[in-house]
Image (cartoon, rainbow, N blue to C red; front, side):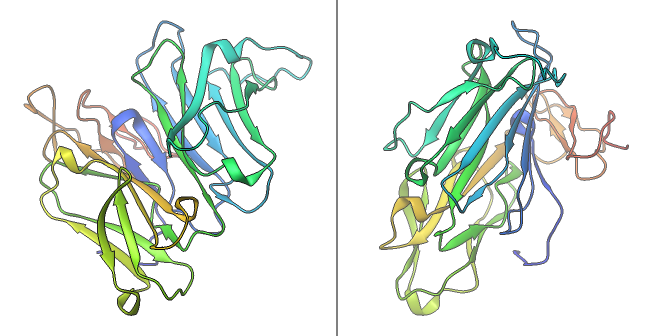
Length: 275
């Protein structure tokens, strides 16, 4: 069921993504990726998105490694060779982005835009030597006809889920929903509710992906974006064959389906997110 009054952050297990419910007043979304380490000895990356809902031509993304030490006197950085940033959706937009070093930190990269024409989409940050582990965030334009109830939704195999979009504008057109850029559902213009719901019963791994909603005649850049992440195990289980029982994760934490560790929501820490 989708409601308008939910304010808690939604955790996403795979790659440890954490995003808040997106409303027009949200100005910051933090997306965390925790790993046991990689060739670069970077323990975690943080992708900071100051404006998920873009209202002006000035917008930015910042990818920062676990070393947050300020470098106020630094004018150069090797971070652009360490951290990679780019766009995964839509592929029709230019993929070469204005990525440069963020010299305020030891290891950080940033993207800065000066025009709105190229801001929309799904963006990622990763260690350049790690092509498979990426963290994601999303930018949508203020012209969007819908807003996602959350930037990410995480469920386990076999669970039911409602993918929800809140209508921002009244329009005399059908509403359409796409999955991974392929049409999957429409609602006649006279039947569009305040909260557009796409229900999935008994989620399968094939249901995972990027879901977008917009008016049928609207440009792709006016879409709302949310990602459905599906744990490979049933609720409460983890492991290669889902043979292990998950710990009880507190404060909205979720058991990682591959490591069994509790992935905590922002503001909490500890083995079971208890503090």
